Length: 307
Length: 249
Image 1 (cartoon, rainbow over the protein chains, first blue to last red):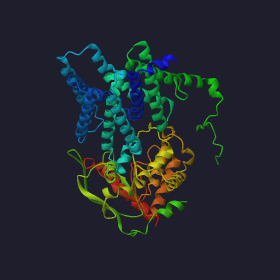
Image 2 (image 1 turned 45 degrees about the vertical axis):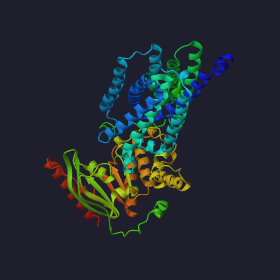
Image 3 (image 1 turned 135 degrees about the horizontal axis):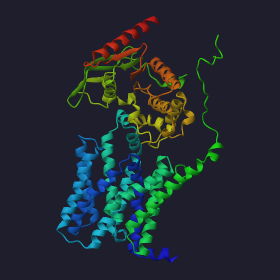
Image 4 (image 1 turned 90 degrees about the vertical axis):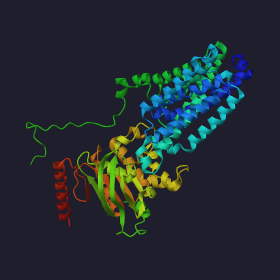
């Protein structure tokens, strides 16, 4: 029992635990839409774009989350301006802008000295190092993101599933795309403290991708993604605590493990599950949905109803 | 056959002979390319209008412009004297296959219920009345038994039926369909034609962009100016269709 209870008596660990649970919930729900729309690279790009904000905040001795928040919102606003003329899914322009932001962070960093451990925390996360302000901000922002997603869920579904039909119904599809981008930016911001700038994308994408393998309904998928993210995050935090490994890295690896388990053994789509279900002996016991009748027209065969 | 649906249509609130959908000097441009210009049409109620023409003549573009998906470079489109942008709720649009993400996890019931959102409000839950309309629309297209199935599991014909049921659930005055007969089975094809007649008899306007040959009915014939042979071909079709129409009267 002490494996569980010992860390819980540590207030740093407890704050980290609350932080990763909140982050995993939000990332699972937002990630569901990112995965379904196939714009995972967008989340990755957004994660890069908050890097300069984090670096500036770090060098100025400010709160990293606040720095990330400012950078994330500036980038989302910039995207909003750019997409007024161009399509959001224009991969090329997104690639240019977000890598430029990351490069900016690298250049700012170049002439400063940062302790190896500090840099490691920025890049790979430090959930146990989350302060009370970090946790409070995470919960406030996360609640806002989830509430927005829930309130506007029908609009997001309609504009993702059938954008033309949505526009014909008068929905502002472009504005909804930009809003989803902003919500993703906020998610990346709150998630970065837990798993770091580089690994943020894994928390956003991997649990949702795993959930997609397990269900083909939207709400269960969002719930499952949140649940899988929480399981991986809590487990990763405990393993990190006891083994003294990077908690962020461990969270991502556990999450990836769950993904491959689902990929192999998901009830309806798992590679192994299907291989077993599709054995000829097993298939022969099932009634087919359709049957074939072959009718050949040829001079040698007299049509039965010929006059 | 359509008792519940027809009881909700309101053919009396506007005179049957009044112009319903009016296109005045409509022009559409992509960047600096003018696709169509000077399109004028005055379509009364109870019409099934086919937009025909060779590939690249702008059939789909014109339909999209009426649906509000493509901005007008010039002219205006009105519905019952109101700018169309203010009467979106009275227009249902059935997009082309390629415009839909068929892998998105929604059920047939979800898709048809989407037709109720504009009237009900996007932030509000569906009511019993909405549910009744959705059930009615699904029964009408013979897809009630598919209600819980994912849209991705359906055949092309069944998917088209789901989208037309969604259009039905919108209770529109104008129904726009982009290539509705492409890639479907003959049973669905026949059902859609029956539904066109039904909509027509209920005073609605049906506009379809189509490349299939049309016998009879109203048409907007588009010609590519660079392609006179194709244009003559479609004039021929139009004349033929006109004759066909007269034979029946």
